[in-house]
Image 1 (cartoon, rainbow, N blue to C red):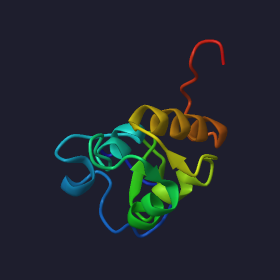
Image 2: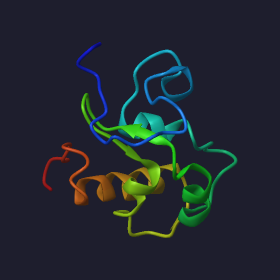
Image 3: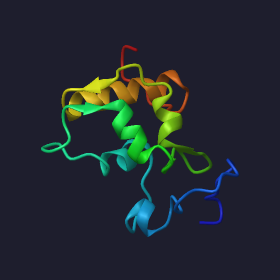
Image 4: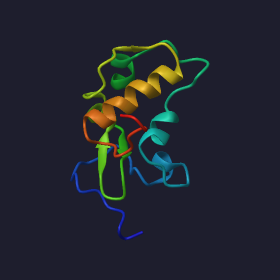
Length: 108
């Protein structure tokens, strides 16, 4: 676990690897964001409201990099998401566009 560190130097509201950030198990990127939305209650969801509520929260991208929710959403173009699938498509594309995520679907 010593290789798990945060190069950002930011003072996060909670430890991204602690109980509040990881719920007992290390979670990265989209898994962290997934815990912040409820498929049945939160949609349609507005980007501005989501970032206002969670923008300062840390998201571990990989074993070295931690960014804020707001940092991720700087790269997400859509301002509203109709459902969880739309949310994931837009956020995933934003993470790829911002070079925050190495995953690239086949054909992209």
